[in-house]
Image (cartoon, rainbow, N blue to C red; front, side, top):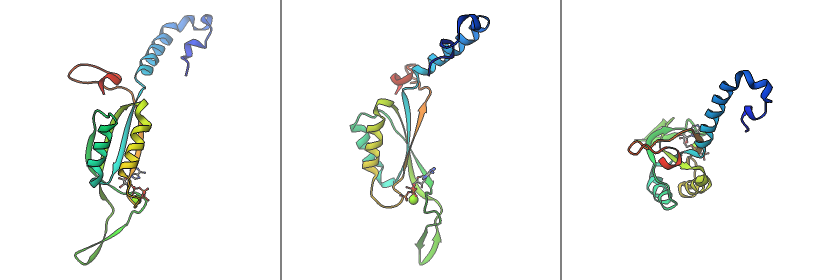
Length: 147
Ligand SMILES: Nc1ncnc2c1ncn2[C@@H]1O[C@H](COP(=O)(O)OP(=O)(O)OP(=O)(O)O)[C@@H](O)[C@H]1O
Ligand SMILES: [Mg+2]
């Protein structure tokens, strides 16, 4: 989207050029930092090693994995435990958070989809978010250089 300052004649903006320029500067900063995506994938725990390996092979530099509990559409799923039926609202899952250069997005989502697939219910979901900024603490690098 073009900066608003580009679309307004000088005579009109003369009085508030400073604020507009500040806003446009900030927008420029944002542009630099909008080439990163955060991929959040919820997968079956036993698929973690395969997914990690496949992602490393396509050049993913880092992954955060967390043990989580979740449910999808089959909430209220029942499970037998020592002869009795229990309602299991939340099942163990692994959540992956992967920050990437957005040129890798399709490769990453396809790799996760293919590797985490069993074809049975509960295979998981992938969510994609924009990242505004990333900073590598040791070196101070930022943006895609920090990934
Ligand atoms: N809408 C959602 N928001 C947040 N997390 C979700 C959502 N849907 C699913 N999840 C997470 O993903 C996990 C796996 O979801 P799941 O694959 O069972 O989805 P589903 O829609 O029920 O698909 P399926 O019919 O294949 O089971 C859930 O346990 C939960 O952690
Ligand atoms: Mg489900």
